[in-house]
Image 1 (cartoon, rainbow, N blue to C red):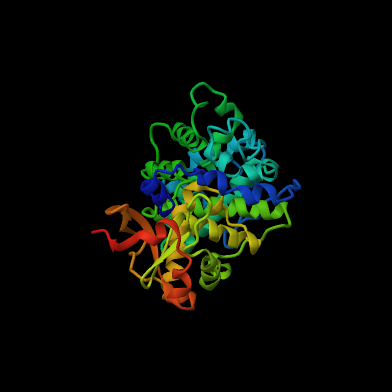
Image 2 (spheres, rainbow, N blue to C red; image 1 turned 90 degrees about the vertical axis):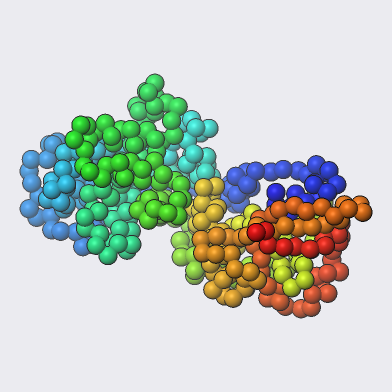
Length: 397
């Protein structure tokens, strides 16, 4: 239960409930003009090995961009890890079927990415699966270089994940009775497993896990998380190429804690008609509802005309809140330590219900009230309703 639900608990009032996934895309859906623009092909990595000695015995007669850019440069490495034949088959599959849209435009109720990126369907539907796959594969390799000091042994696994991560979007696979009820990452993983047959590389299971989870944040597996970042970066490049309304900027460059505090300040101890409250003060601490903070930071991104797909994907909310909390901690604004990788703590609020005190647990982000400026009395006089009957707030052990 968030702090917005306290009123319902104490007075049995039935508040209006709205899913966050319905709120998150609102500003995107109604504040953007889409113009389908083909996204240009991705160029090979600048530091890729020379392509002058490409072998002529590639499986098909015509060497595709995918082969020349992301396959042939690493042939020796792929062969050493028994992955060459399988990767060639993945590229062949993309050669034949990769002209389809890179976003699933049917079965919207089944495919999670299609629901999350519904506001961008016109732009992303104009990007072919082949182009998106090439872009994503390039970015996976870039992320490997950035995250791992000794990244070269990971290149074959990264190539398989990049090339195979969206095979489940190919219509002929989705229409098959074997796959039609699955989300595209699961279909992709099944197709990649089929491609590598009875003698797969030793790391194939890890690759399949990364494919299945490339729209999910784990926070525990660096490889899976870099795959997800690469996919998001690819989508952001494609959207920015298709609209002039947004730009891609690193989070640290556009998010400013003082701006967030300025947005929170007028909402402190203010109840709306449904008796909901973004943040309340008690003694010297400002207790904030994390869900409300997420929506406020999303509004900051919109006003800055920054494209950050994490605000469109419900699976990214926790990761965004952890990053926001980290920035607030670095600025010295946390009133209580919440621990690395967390965006709040469990607190017990005790309040009067008639003549009796009742306690309930809540998950809240504690900030220093002094960071807002002014005197505590300025915020205290705003309290009405349930805010006036809070007796204590304690950390839940």
